[in-house]
Amino acid sequence: QLNEALQSRAVIDQAKGILMVTQGISADEAFEKIKSISQSANIKVRELAQHIVRDTLAKGQATSRPV
Image (cartoon, rainbow, N blue to C red):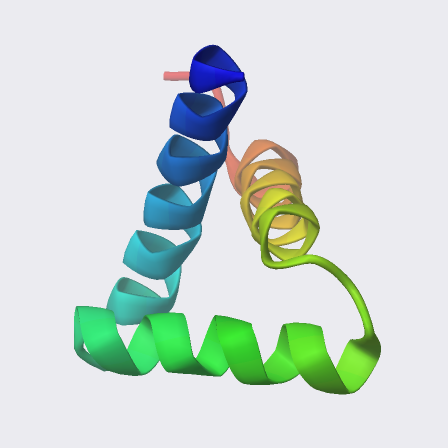
């Protein structure tokens, strides 16, 4: 359970960081946004954070070019 909690925390922090950079908001604002969306979409915060991270990584891979 501890390992799962730590993994959840890590993915939530990653999603917060993504929102902070892409939307120019604070950590608190990013978490509130994640919380609000999760409640309105009826999805767990952890699951929403995983979607944000996964989608961002997928977009990065689609737009990245070999050097």
